[in-house]
Length: 380
Image (cartoon, rainbow, N blue to C red; front, side, top):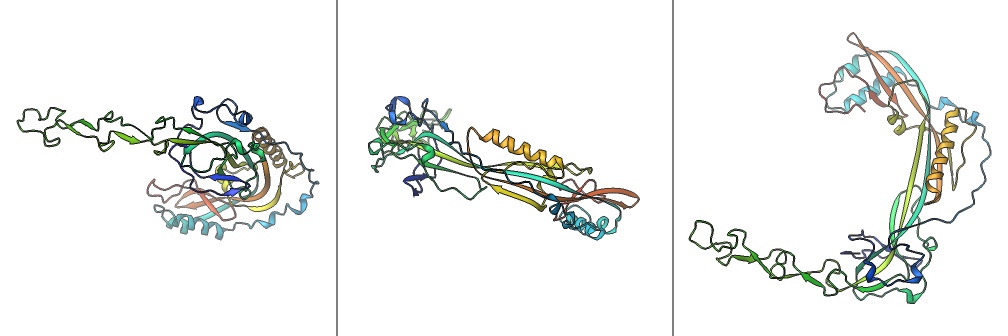
């Protein structure tokens, strides 16, 4: 890897952890690397390769549930007029340009309440790719093919992060290292400065090399009348240390395994008759109704709201299709939550207004507030 070093080396099952980012193309020039037969299965075509995980047999589906014990909507507290007013006052006080008089003096006319169901599916997966990379060779030990055959990438064991926490880590594949002359400086450790072409001096920018400024008899003070100045790019040396090998003249090439742990998310909120934006309801805090977590979860087929069952089937099918050919599923989690939603109609100074209270933490969405003095605040 150009211009990089191994900041941290954690050895886990013989694999070195690389915590740096590639600063150069991952594939070295093909003419610099001999064809290594034992690596053919690792890299095909000389570039980056994605490796498909081994197939695993699915588990058994769960027994059907009796949802009558779950569907107790009384667990979600009813929003009273007092709660509705306090929620609006709290919202208004958090906004710099909302007046509190309306929130305190309004007359609530009607509360329309509805409890929604939110289905959420999380799929935590692991994918692996390999790529060539390199770093300056500083006479460190070389773990090359003479020490054995490189393991297959899905056979390399690493520490998995906590479930549903995304992460990316890089590992050096054992027995894949090879030392080559630096292709940037051709093994010299330095290269000619592009600013002065190796001369160490450049034309004076003040007098343009004329030694005197136009229409002046005195010599140029910037270059002392020489017409040339020391090159600032190389400090007058005429050459620069090679940024690729850091002056070491050689590079250690190796195959890098990149492992990505990703948490894919599918969300669905049941249909409702109120005009609160769906994106707010998707993020709202809810009351947990059901949770199912396993290596593989199965679609919910008997939920009282058929749209939730259909959403479960669709979400699992989408994740399966998206991940089956490129990642290994480590864990899945599906949940159903109850999301309270209240539409508040109120009267203030002869006009009727509306706002919404959503979530168990009583967040507020204001459609049109009567005492708003500027446009600098968001209404969410």
